[in-house]
Image (spheres, helix red, strand yellow):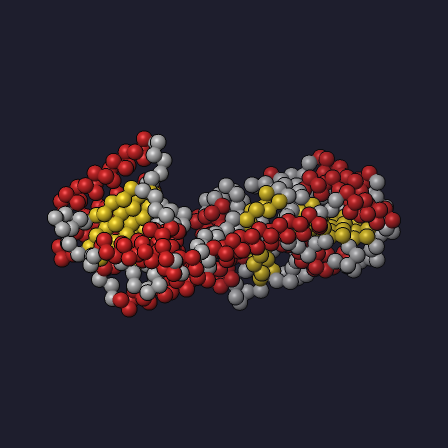
Length: 514
């Protein structure tokens, strides 16, 4: 599947968002329903029919996910265990026809019919029927009337994304005297926590919940219903729709902003023009994710011959300084780019190598802290399959690109928490990156390395291209006239965006050609 950041999923040049928007109801429609003469008439009729019985209501369409059979069996267990409630309670079971032409649904209806007949035959008397069974659709007035006259609502689906029946039932209780029994497998249970929450597969639990509901003190019923009604009134169907549309518009606005920052053909023409007119040029280039796509194993992300040729030709242009600034170890950069006429920066600014010069430290550093932290990182390697530790001279990186995304997200957060606690008195920084957590000495960044080169000369053309949070440090210190380019779809201090590393290479190729 796709990985996300706070629900946002980047899919090429667009972004999608996955979020939860619990559907609301027209609260006032149900709360004020009793003011409707037709509803009042239905309520009066139902009360006469039900006499002085306590009413447990079940309303659902015929569907195997609704848990109707378990519900009936739970009610039967309730009658078995609580003889004092026999002849005093009735289950009003309303089953709305659904998919009547499908054999499995016809079979399920037969099972419901048989179970209702069995329970009524076993426990019923001349003056009392345990279950009033209706297989039909109910319009608004009869449905609300049943909501109002019932003492308990039994909503026990085996699986349900939301279940609006539970919300409608609570909304109609103007006197607050009723109890909702709700399945933990219904989405509504996350909002209606004051209901009696049950496991719909546990028939004994259903039976016990019915007893608790019927015997719940009136004050407790009112307290619970008041809380749920206030919540449903605030988050009604209008609020639900507005929230969904607002999130959609915000996402679209973010998409438009990204598109506005894309370095299109017109922007590239201006960049190339400024490049050609400049007297002194400085170009900063990240490597992984900027010049080449990410690889599961960093050692496999070798530069292509085409890329090496472009960098070589670019570095041969007069008055042009190329700085490859990466988080990789210096030996790695040296083996790949050491023969080119370019400058190199390793470990995000720890090591600096100017053209035709040896490597040198950006500032005096110590690495004795690594011995303290390596056992922690190795422990997390054991806890996260397919992760590994990359030890550099003055930094350590915990890579998890090949690991299971869901478990990796959990373990990375745990690792960062442990490292923050453990390094409180150590002069290091912790940087969560793109499938990596890096620890390095404080005061070292691509920004400080960038300033080292910017201060060396009066450059009238500066361009920096990078793809992640480490490059943001560099973007922040660039002059206002510089071209800062972020590769990928993300919020950034950079002025421009490119879609992927291929577009970066194509841009460099254009600079060489022009």
